[in-house]
Length: 225
Figure 1 (tube, rainbow, N blue to C red):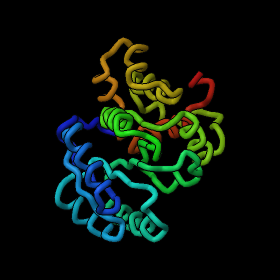
Figure 2: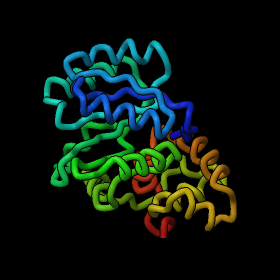
Figure 3: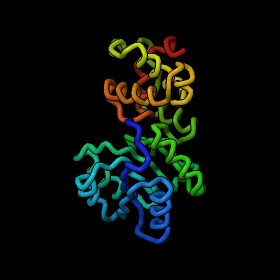
Figure 4: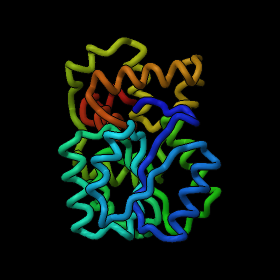
């Protein structure tokens, strides 16, 4: 996933058009200097027009407002337009079933209904910096559901990555953050982000979580160790 620079992002907030959603929209816009379009679930077809009007970096989804019909319609829009925007779920229940996460193919963040605005802003800053915002347990469960088991041999396609890209994808596969990768390899975080961007394109993934899954699926355990 390409890093999003604060001040240049545009997002869609899928939520009921009420005072609470409007206040949340304004708070995020002001603190992160973002432009957000609020769209209610029953008007989800407008997502098509939103993506035509400008490039959308994030789709923020108020999870409780999305019933089965809204989720189905949302994915129809996503599938038709192959949107590159990353997905963030907000107001989820701490007991959310991990299988529910498989609905969201470009998921980079999960926030709970108990999270306050300060935590939300902190998490969004991490996401805009190319990180994921979800618990390690949630990531682990997501990977288990997505792939089931480790590969036993390394995919030959891995050898097409540069040596530095291999080092970075292996560290990412072990759960390292951009900061940790930079410290391990004695390079800047900007260098790490640039390599990750190129690597994601080469292995055809859209975000950090998918890259982590790719690493687990395509790099033998002894290489990740």
